[in-house]
Amino acid sequence: QHLNFALGNVYARQEKWKFAQQSFFKAWQQDVENADYIFNLAVTMDQLGKQEQAIDFYKDSLSKSKDKQVSFSRQAVVKRIAELSEL
Image (cartoon, rainbow, N blue to C red; front, side, top):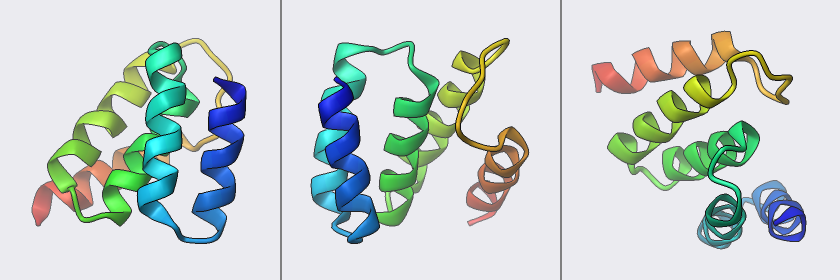
C-alpha cells in the first residue's frame, strides 16, 4: 500500500488526478483505517469535481485520524467540508 500511496503522490504533484485517485484507492483498499490515505483520496475526488464523495472521504479522514498523528490539517479539512457543503 505504501507504493500505491507514493505513486499517488507523484501523480498528484503532476496534477494527474485520475491516476492519483486510482493509486490512492488501491492504497486505501489495503488499509481502510489509514487517515492519510483517506484524506488523499478525498483531495483527488475534490479535484475531479466529485464533491459528495470528497465530503464523505474528508469526514472519514477526520474520524479515522482521532488520537493519531497525520500529515494533514484537521482544521483545513473541516473548512473544506464546510465549503463543499455550500456548493
